[in-house]
Length: 312
Image (cartoon, rainbow, N blue to C red; front, side):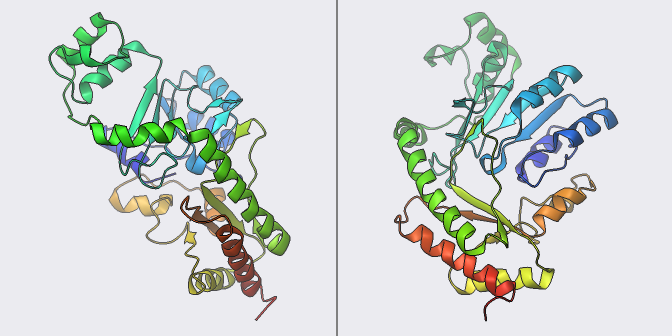
């Protein structure tokens, strides 16, 4: 996941407990159960669907309910991603979405929160910057009596979305289904090239059939290579104009080891580290032309063959 998650937990005075990831780039739910047993005071599962990769949500809910854990979903990378045909995020008590510039809904900066809990909704209205009885200006809001309570009790953080940001988001929400189709068409063309030209070296994780995906980022890892070959792969990609991002870079904000520099607790995550050791991330820019995507896929495939010593 991303550095913002442990940062937020620590800012609230809570302690983050890190859970292993699988080769499919989702939370390891067996390890989740072990961590809950090891930390019996745990109260919240903050589940990040990194790059729209989704764990078995039916089992996630079962684990949370069995252990009295409140589920919060981080859907920063999941606008347009579905579980069983419905927009991801509906399992949680609270879900957060991002509309930052790298996201499918791009308003430059910003985001929004969803919840079915009226009390939480009232508190969020006042946390965001509402004051006095201006809750009446919200077209969709919880009952007035809950807003009255929140008005008296909640601090004002003045972090509400401005009108320009909202105006940028609205058309991108409206045409999201059409854009998801375009993202996925381009993503499929890239994966096809990688599997045809370097399928014995490059592994592109697949998702649960219950997930409706959005191919806005390409994630893959190399198999059967050494650290030296891995470095050669990166060098070749960059030299040919495809800046793949290595997850174990010393500056990558998504590698848990780098979080330790600002005080995040240290956890031994050998399975996660082994996946990230050869793992890469690449944005699929929406402003590129369709023919650009197979072209950079061929560069990645070629670089992997160079790294493996199959071509000079």
